[in-house]
Image (cartoon, rainbow, N blue to C red; front, side):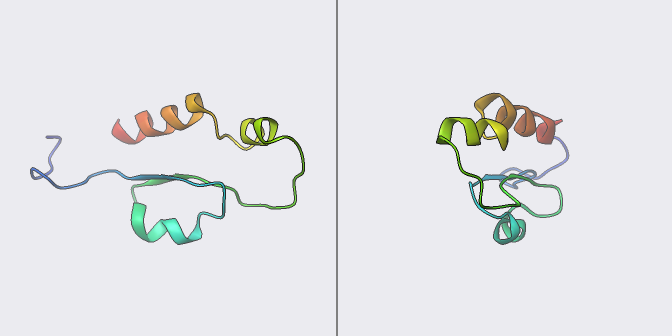
Length: 68
């Protein structure tokens, strides 16, 4: 299991359209977040999500990178 004991979580990822700071304690040093670091953008949600990386393709790529 990649050097980890059965049931041990090796990688975590948080996806939230908000600031990532609260998530760092959950994802740990080897985890990743797809969050926002700014605020005040105004546009249709579909456009903003794409611009800030909240697409299925981007989130999946980050998750795959975590798994190696």
